[in-house]
Length: 191
Image (cartoon, rainbow, N blue to C red):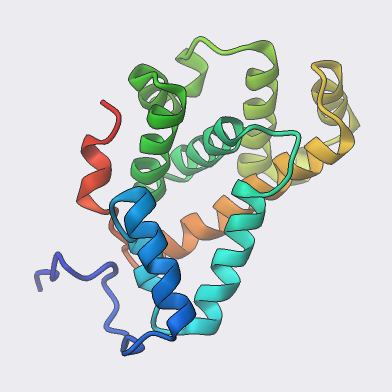
């Protein structure tokens, strides 16, 4: 069975139509700022409560107050998604790293192998922590947190690193399970 390329996932979920005014407003803001409505939002639009929960958590972790820069948070998203081989998030957040950093090669390295990228010591420690959390979370210990403290991260920052990594581990699994597809526009952005 071939998949309809206009559907954000492989699932046949009824979409709320019309979307509530607040959701329509949010989608309009996305269209204006990003040039598209991310398929992840369209995928969640079958249940406005789930969509609102997803966007609230995403917006808090990725856009809220933090000692982590927006680029650092996107780098975590890409590294976690690369380890999990999440097609949607590798493409979408790889584009964000390219755009925010102004460095297409950095975005590619994050997707392929962050260890090959020219990174600051702080970034490398952060991404090593996110990778370990993704691959073997039960093995995180005080020495891992101390490595982050040694390069200038506060305990609040460590909580934020862990939260961003954990969020993308969850969303990667949902995206993979439902065959969520990235918007075509991401492929050409910031190249």
